Each structure stands twice: as structure tokens, then as C-alpha cells.
Length: 421
Image (cartoon, rainbow, N blue to C red; front, side, top):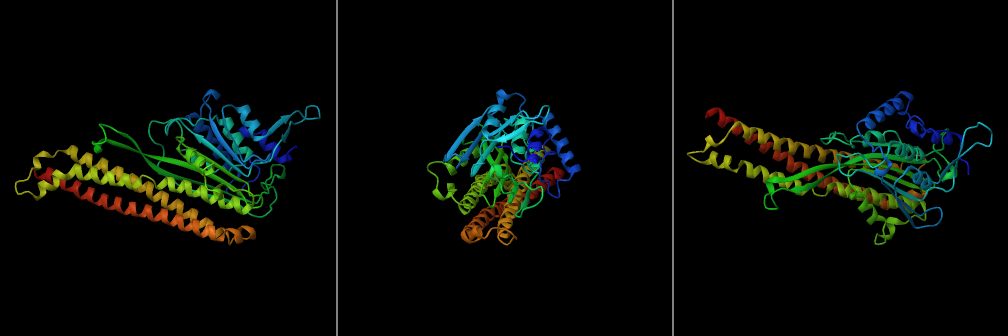
């Protein structure tokens, strides 16, 4: 079936994303969209994407498809397969020299997960720019998501760990030139969320498990885009990550051994309820390993400064053992601790904003009463679980903050001993 003219025009110009999007929120004025386009050019130049389709792999999982399948999945390896998977065809115009006609062969599934990933956190994403802009155009993804994926790509050092954010675009009423496309099963009454979370991973144990001083930890980011159609119940997730680990969790959430309520999509309320479970999977990932990482930092600092404390308490002292390099070493550990605090605070703020959004969603005008009535208890439970996650983050922030003070005190002690001797 042919799609609406304005959407056809947008799709035919997918390479111009985000300047081609149909619905433009107040922040998506022309100058801002041009700026995003320039940013995308810069990201392509700095190897955010792969250049060759032989390096492409985009896992997609569709649940409750229009054809009645409970699950349909594929790893997309080329542009043609992507277009076919989306169910689009571009045919010559019946009029000579006319604009090609964009048609769709199927409606959106009830839930779709798209996973953009790289071989590692400092490698290009395994998708070409044209394939990504086709995906983003097809789903009319908010341009602000480009800010969140800009931290990925080929790089010698982790890029922009300080970047953090939560952005929402909510259109719960019918509006002119809105995102409604009935041919794809989209009412246009939807919300879009973009946010990022930071996890920590033990990369290696140099020298064996007993040599804990040589452990190498890495802070990793995940960028999440989520759409929910409050009338149709259709749900979209785009997760960008420097590895496949979150995809495995998504499989667990939607696989044969998953809880039935987490993969139920028969009604709009069930779709909404399932979307909350996906948010929680992502939030729980972000809290894992942080307690072990902060504990490791405590042990490292204790090991690095034990002799200093003994010397301070000793009558004879051993201050001659210290050199300026010890101050530099303590500063390096101080930097690592502050980096951890920054990531922990970032996660806490993002999850707090996520909680506030859903807490206020029910009171928004035009939010469907059937979701309110059916999912009120689910939203309360969801917010309670987010509060538990935030409490866990705050506990680690408190520990790490105390550690910063201890590091600073001992750094000053070393400086003082160097001045005296």
C-alpha cells in the first residue's frame, strides 16, 4: 500500500536525515537540524560507522508481527535485506518522469528491538551511515538520539564519558503534520525517550587473580532510544552499545524462558507493561559491578598507602622511601575514583528523570484511560524498583566520595614528607 506523500518524501530522502523528518518538535527547527547534519558528517569522518557492507551486522527482533508470528528475528548484513525487513518497496511512478512511489507490505510489529553495536567500545558501529539513516527515517527517530550515539566509533580513548542525558518528545494528541502513518499501524500519539547509562566491566586481570592491583576496569556506555504508541501499543527500542552483552539480556527478556508478562503484547496495556520491564533490564545492567569496582578502588588505595600510614605512626619513620612519583600515582587513583563518581552520579540523574517521566505520564492530558486503569500498580512498582537502583548508586557514590577525601589526605601527607626530607 502506498504511504502518505509526506512520509514518502521523507523516506526517499533518508540520506538527508535528520533534515528530512516529518514531525518536528519545537527544538527541531531548521538550523538545529542542519547542525545535526553537520555533526553526522563529522562523526562519519571520525569513523562512527563502517564503510563496507561486508562489515555490517544489525540484529533485529520483532515480536507479535502483523503476520501473526510470536517472534521473527534476523541479523541484517546488507542494505537490501534491511529495506526488505522493514517491508518497504520503491517503485517507478505510474506517470512518466514522476517521483517514485514508496509502498509498505506490512505494518509494524507490536515490539521491535534494533541493536547497533561495535566489535568493541572503541571500534566503528557495525552499520553504514546510509543504513542507519534509513532505520532512523523509517521510524522517524528524534534527532536528539544522534547526541547519544556520538560517543561511539573508532577512537584511541573513551570518548566523552562526561556526556549524560535524558530527553523526551511526547505527542499524545492528534496534531497537524504529526507522526501518524495508519498504513504502518502508527497513530501518531506517542512518546519518544532518549537516554544513556554507564556500566563498568572488569576487562582483564593482568598477573592473575591474586594480583588485584593490576586489574583493568572499563566504564562502558549504552545509548537507548524508545518509542511507545499509546493508541496502538507498538513499541520500538534502539540500543547502541560497544558490545553484544545487552542484546543477550534482551533475548532473555523476550525468549522462551522469559516471564509471560514481559513479552505479552495482546493489548495496549500489556505492551506498556512489557516496555517497563525492558527499561528495568537496562537500569539493572547499569548498576552491576559498581560495588565490586569501588571495593577494588578501596583495596588499591589501601595497598598503595599502607606503608605511608605505618611510617606516619612509627617513631623512626621511613619517609625517605617516598618520591614525587608517589604523588603522581595517588593522583592517578584520585582521577579514577572521580571518574567512577561522575558515572555513578550520571546514572542516578538519568534514572531519576526516567522515574519522574513515568510518574507524571498518567496525569498528562490525553494519556489513555485504559492504560491508566490497567497499569497504575505496574507504574508504582516500576518507580519503586527505580528508587532501589538509585539507592544502590547513592551508596556507592558515598563510598567513593569518602575515598576521594582519604586519597587527598594521603596525597598531602606524601607532599609534606617530601618537603621535610
